[in-house]
Length: 210
Ligand SMILES: [Zn+2]
Image 1 (cartoon, rainbow, N blue to C red):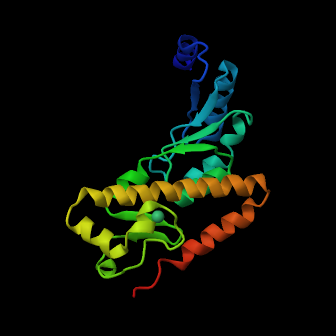
Image 2 (cartoon, rainbow, N blue to C red):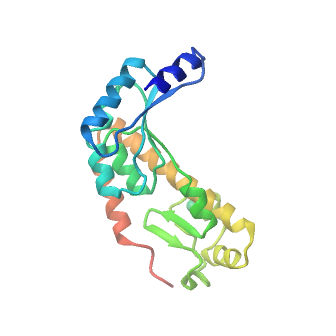
């Protein structure tokens, strides 16, 4: 907390920039409250939930998110660091998180994984080798509009850079669509229905092999 105060003092008032205080406390509610109280007193532009999503598992993470965001000011952005998979993101937003950061869309893209409404697609799998369909028929991203699963499979197997580029493009597009969908649902007061659809579609699994 001394460091937090020092950084606040050193940062000063910078229009167009924001300094976030990072709540710590692991999975202990009392420590989270102690941390939040001290950070609120310093007054940051936004607040992050730190020390979470570090391998404790989704159940424990959601357990902390059931109370941790509520300890931070509702009129300031609340940021969950290093999250995550699509269902982690949806569960975090449901619990009051506004923003996240993660390498997953690009790192997964480089290793042949695509996130879709129907779950994860491993493009290296042989089932895609002759499939002329896109990753996701309903996706408007350039990788889905212009390329087949067969092509994406081929360039991944061939070690071509375009493979990681296209899958990353798709993944980023999909993550943005999730966030846009949740923003719209929240503003129209129908988040519960949106969340139910999200889980139902994922549970259907990937399209059947041709
Ligand atoms: Zn796509």
